[in-house]
Length: 462
Image: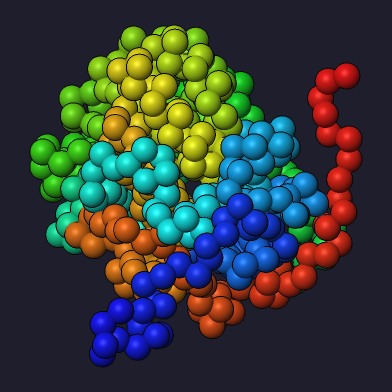
């Protein structure tokens, strides 16, 4: 220490959390927010040394999937990430059901990084890249023509984004006569159910009426693609092809453009549509079918020239393997908050690379999930681009407080990686969170003591 350097200044360069082996989890709490861009359950994992780890449940999921795991983690050392993940992973599942295990796994990595004073990517083996390319997903709402969508995407490019995604599907033509065929009355029923589900006047209904509307909406949109009997006519294919042509006329052919949200149509119609848009040099076609239909994905991939992509709803590495072995995808698209977390996503990317398959990463959540995904992206060689959904959310960056991260995480279409320990988050901004609480799930970091002793004989074998 130099003569003119104070004790406090010296201490600022020294880690005061110098006993990672004695670190223990003491509490886990949650806060639910809306609009960032969707519903997010944020997680704080507290420890006996004052360190706090941050995690997040998958967008639109229920924090119940994480709460039920609290009694299995209290008193444990969060640095034993793989051990604790193996303890709780049986309680996760595909899609939103993976959100509890995955969100808590992220918080464990954050704590381990803070305890040892290093960024997560370094614990994963180091960086392949210093900055993470973001691809900007642009909603179709309000962009009824390809030209309108093209202009919206052009604005993204002017903001620095070098990779784009848009919607393309039956939702854009469902109100145009002669574009779709289906059992008579079925499409009208779908429209009516959706209209009732999102009617702003639903507040005047009874709980029973709202529940009935919600259940009907769930049921009709839960029919898997091969069973809806919806088919796209030549007129419908013409309109969707023209939509993409008009988009490309505005943005050009050089920038990668992925497409998503095709609607619940079967394999044959996916092939018809895919062949119509092959000519537009698309980056990938995403989630055209339910991911479980491995053989259908293989048939689709062989029938079209555009890369096929899926994976955001797949939990655990072993469930990606059949798609890779069958040659059903050219791009996998895991969500860190569904796969099982940070390490599982890294393993998935490495496995995909063995099959010559690239990895993009799905992300529609807060900066917590975004940073977790960015660390995976930095440490995985075959990474392509990370999704970003929050261009129109002015308070998104304000959710977190950090002394070492840039105030605006996504700049000119990239996230710059830093040497900040863990995720790089010092704290969350409770003032901002309080302004965006979920209307039906109020409260900031409420006690969760009722979950402290939730435990059972969980072993799956005798």
